[in-house]
Length: 168
Image (cartoon, rainbow, N blue to C red):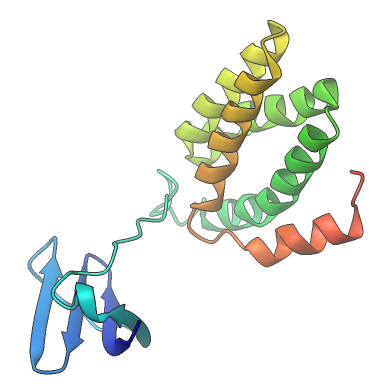
């Protein structure tokens, strides 16, 4: 399948897509400010479609200067927690998994990530109730998926931790 190269310019609240003579701007706030340009591949059969807009989850406290360093540090530790959950789930070590999930339940909202708390609380409850492994796995995967979409999440840290601690 052939593809054409388009140019995408990201902005705080919108996207600009240029492909050949075509030009499209998607803006949620009516403004378009500067941002880095990056190449993206657009298949010919989607030449008129906008790219998928990826919304990274941000802390409710992201605009609080007193919280910014704390949030960065918290988000910086999340890949390690994801690697631990994946490993513990794979090894079916349910009680240590519950402790990790319980810690995320307690910490998520404190750093402005209420959804982390909600997802972790659901998994924590299922584990405590002795729910079926399929249910627990689904809840852990939902939690991991959400965490990976948090602004500032570094998946290379997750991979590095998993490689250093394969049985963590």
